[in-house]
Length: 296
Image (cartoon, rainbow, N blue to C red):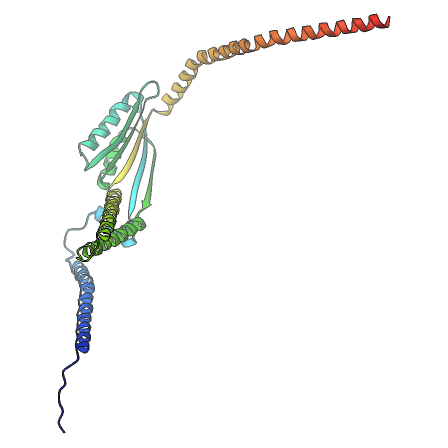
């Protein structure tokens, strides 16, 4: 009995080609997913096999690694209040500002500066700088003086960074899909205009997300310090007493001025009211006199 080989139908051949393409795509996707993980594992293994005699990591790097292990991304903000004689406040604030702008302890930027004179001089300075420059700059601000107050607070930006990264990834993928769709030849003019508007909108959102990511990274990699320079407690008390003495004459003058204004308001009212009462009493007397005359 003879067997003849019949040619495969076109539908079956197409099905086989689609199955083959799907298999190749799945294999490529699996390689892409496992490749980075394998590379990370190799890097981790290489790091663990590094010789113990190598140079020890710096404390800052160890702190960053500890924060990464905890899954936190902290943005630090410091508050430092320094008390010193009033005649030294301006010079000390200027020294801290110059050390920051000159990069004496590392990259640093002055964000704000306020200074007032008089009997109660004060100064405020806000800077953003790298972590290793925080302690030297604070030590310069309080050199030989009293640091009356110091505080620190941290904001964990891990969730915000993760959400922003997911948002940027979604926008990039959507942007790529729209660009591919825009290349089609069978699109109508209305569809092209709609696609162009949507692409422009996504690009604007992506730019905003990139700026937010840069701002988050800046807050994480640097720290903020708010300096406040004020006079000592003795000078502050004496200045308050002197201010009260100086205000004594002003307070007395203000009270006298208030009384004069009150008299100026009440005097016309008193004259009008007195005249009205006098007329009313005169009318009542005349009325009683008429009643008596009629009864007599």
